[in-house]
Length: 242
Image (cartoon, rainbow, N blue to C red; front, side):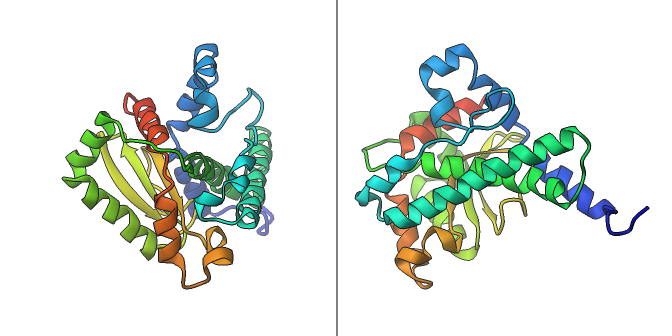
């Protein structure tokens, strides 16, 4: 076997394990693309859209026109280009894997870009300056784990300050509880059997251009004020029955 093309057991299992972490995504993607769900608009707001052959790049360009979000049109536009690249890479890697084309690109991006696409989809969908409220069901789930919304929110933002990638609120499908998960990259420390309902991107590219290298806390404070809790609540409703 050509050693340059050989895949180590550890690398292979890492790729498979991370992909398994998104175990519910396929179920939700299918559900969000049936005719009934499409009429309700779920496919456009909650999770990535799969058209039967590939994932679709969603249009979030309206965010560049909302100055109240606390982010410049330039940084949002740059971020959207990154999201688009993740969609393209996961489509390419899935097509390659389906044809047993296993190499560094397909192995990495089947997991890394899938998670990058999915988390950015949630991140951009959660951004809004319109008034919104958490549902009673979501509040109950938050309080069941953290005791109060205030404790949950502090946990979310404290985690965001400690990592370089993501702070994610997700439903643990194994015990039915809400937790916050910290990830330094899209595909490291990503637990199996969790379904994200809120994703806060704290990579440098999300804020440094506007807030500077020392402006992470200021960015987090601004972004968390723009969370669309109506969408987060609907996303929680969509996954809690899995």
